[in-house]
Image 1 (cartoon, one colour):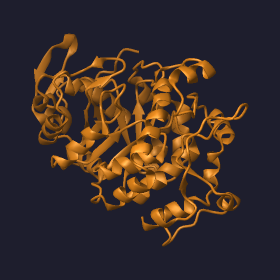
Image 2 (tube, helix red, strand yellow; image 1 turned 90 degrees about the horizontal axis):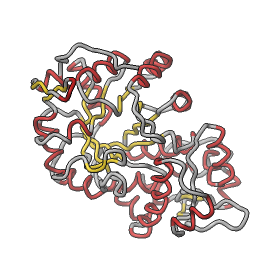
Image 3 (cartoon, rainbow, N blue to C red; image 1 turned 120 degrees about the horizontal axis):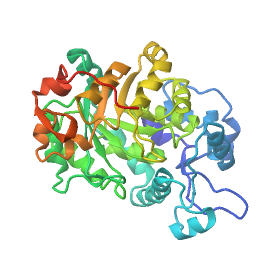
Image 4 (cartoon, helix red, strand yellow; image 1 turned 90 degrees about the vertical axis):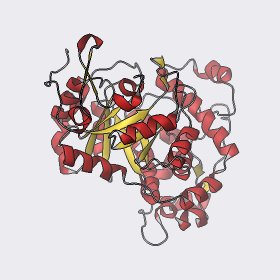
Length: 396
């Protein structure tokens, strides 16, 4: 990691408004100097100088040009636009581009502004230094694999989540540390901490508090990542894993961010929703975890059969690569968990159905039946061992 700090050609790129008729730089903190731009077609170098220093010579950083990024995004089916004007007001942005076309695009537009503000408060060089000095990461991937092997059912990633755009506030009496400690005590293999403030009422501070409280479970930073600054910052405050969403990141972005994660010892959970995203991610080397989101982040419609559909086609390739699959969204009862387990997932990420319970300490030990009736089960009956309700596919 010393190479990160010493690399002479890796520098912060200022956010700026676009010149008339030309797209501005994308939301990427690094830019290439002329010398490194000329060298970027060289093969990626490895060795003692480190991954990050080598990256400035890698052709993937050609994505620093907005036109190239836009062309790549369009060719890869990415529909989420970037405004790249973090110093402009949302009114100015919408006057130029029109309103966001869906909730995910709206979140990303706000995130571009948030990242610029974060950089102003905590410059990249300082954040990188803090990330380098952070204690070693806990093995997020290893914790999931071990729990699945030990119990024979999907390992639980319990999410510390106060609100969502679709549901509003899920839990009024929200103490992230208390909830995280309870989840850990009652059997979660890993924890997910929402850090988006505007739409999920989470925060990086919640992640910091949970880590400082002595929670031993590996922690996933659940963030809408568009820039490496977010990864370095998450690592500096205790994250062990980070979410990368294929719907908003090009292949070049994913490769670049994955290599930063590798340098930092972070596990990357790469989230896909559809066939095209799955195919893209499977072509990228070094992927360990794929999350299949049953919720469209554009429409927020949930369909748990999405997991089965994608794994029926790609399950063999996933197993050959040793990738673990995480089921996400729409998992409210043992039937749902059994359904995605039968489809081939090794872990499940569960938020709303746990945190909305009055007593989060008991939530992991509850199985939910139809008509919102509950049956109490032991921890091993729900996520840690056998399921108490026979698997039943949801209505299609």
